[in-house]
Image 1 (cartoon, rainbow, N blue to C red):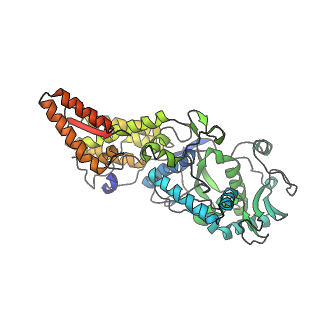
Image 2 (cartoon, one colour):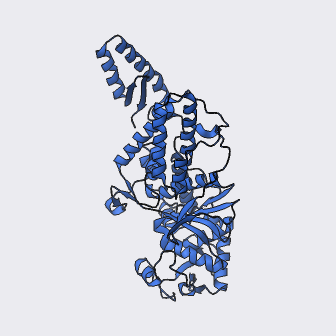
Image 3 (tube, rainbow, N blue to C red):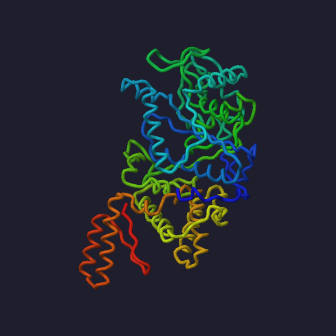
Amino acid sequence: MLSGSIQRSKKISAAVKLYNTETKTKTEFVPLDPNNVTMYVCGPTVWNHAHIGNYRPPVVFDVLARVLRATFPKLTYARNITDIDDKINKAAAEQGVDISVISERYTKAYHQGLESLGVLPTDIEPKVTEHVAEIHQKIQALIERGHAYVAQGHVLFDVSSYSGYGELSKRDPDELLAGARIDVASYKKSDGDFVLWKPSADDQPGWDSPWGRGRPGWHIECTAMAAAHLGETIDIHGGGHDLVFPHHENERAQSTCAHGAKFVNYWLHNGFVNINKEKMSKSIGNVLLVKDLLEDAPGEAIRYVLLSAHYRAPLDWSDDALQQANNSLDRLYGALRKMSDVEVPNNIGNQIPQAFENAMMDDLNTPQAMAELFALSKRANTSESYDEQVQLKAALLQSGEWLGLLQQDPESWFLAGGSQDDTGEIEQLIAERAQAKTDKNWARADEIRTLLADKKVVLEDSASGTIWRIEK
């Protein structure tokens, strides 16, 4: 990490503004406790490899976490792992293994993807299977408060008992029911009532409970885990737009009713990822797995694409977008490489430009923030003042850190796809080409350029010399 040794002298004093899904307004973020901001983000159900859409929330909220940590003394950030689910059960049964084998395999794969995309670890990563007792407590509280009922081994939330149901997604219950995939069952008081606890057959995973052996419903899991680690009322709850209903609507209802207090002060949701302007769908075969993308592209380029649109807007993924991200990062790393001899003092303090900071504090306007990075790189490429270059390099590194970009050595970026053994040969060929040009041996110079092109080495000649990179 290039910026690891740079110490900023103070926290950012400007206000963070966030768009709240519940109020549909962008307002200044005011935490319950300015000394400890709390944030919960819904994590994956670990039954298979995650696709590119699954990775947009952790990248987006990783950026928000970086901004909040630069602004407030402390952030406690939790992102859960759902390791009990019918899809996990099915996969385990088909493979003849315990559900933990499936969940641990794909949790590991998910973590590897996060690391490749530069997503920092959260403070807390609760797992559902480790919070069954807390889930029981929340269900019991809902029953005692008259918001849940037991029927044929199930415990269900009574939607009619909560007048605020539908306020998050801004639709009345009838519309919500019409647009949702609801399990119709004779034991329900209303078709819209949702499961808090369901019975498990002998061949299914289950836990003993006051209502019989069974397993939790999806929505109650996050309520129990968020309360256990962050409190009954939390500052920020995030996730993909697809979770607004039913998951977050149901979380909000059961948490408010179980605790008798507001559950979340700021609801944040990121937009969908479309593939070549079409929604990802197994039926049309356009689901992109991150593990496959990483075979052909650097994780930092994938992250760049995920941040190239505003987080609330849909993101259109394409091969062209990924190539453009590579080219853009080449430009930014190229500016840093030209300043490789510039030393940034450890105590330089905060050099983040005001325009960059303003963009990031305004509901994470990452496209505008990226534009400010290019403005910095343009100045760096033309600056002839060493002192100015010190400030520009620090500004690029510190600003990049907020985005989770530009944190590797430039030479490592440009060598990606090659190996350390290639470097000596490439440098030798470039030196030989330079000598051939000095000797006006143009044929040999062109021959060497062709040899390097075969190795996917791209040359950029300038008045100050030749720089190179491996084509990704």
